[in-house]
Image (cartoon, rainbow, N blue to C red; front, side):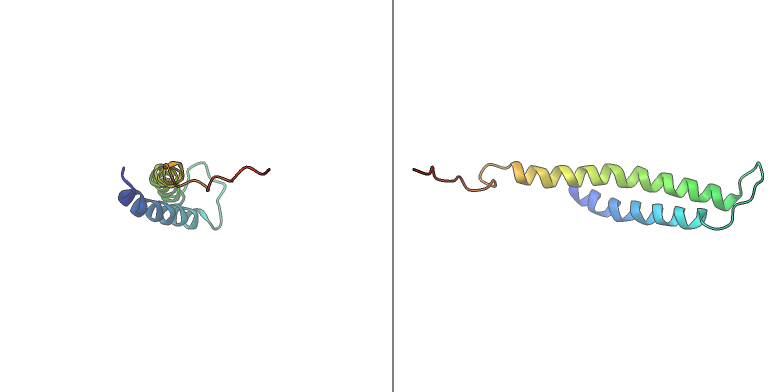
Length: 81
């Protein structure tokens, strides 16, 4: 996954995760079989995590790589006498 794909996948993953949380919110019944709305919320949350976590790791790696570039670090301080 490149950084362009990650920049698209991260907000999409967050949106899916929020949609899943919204589907799971509300009154819960005490039945043994979960409702279709609750199961759709679980699937949506899982899909959001599967998109968001790798995309976030790619973007974090790209950001840290910019810091590790030669010449991108803080300036060297001169020795004090």
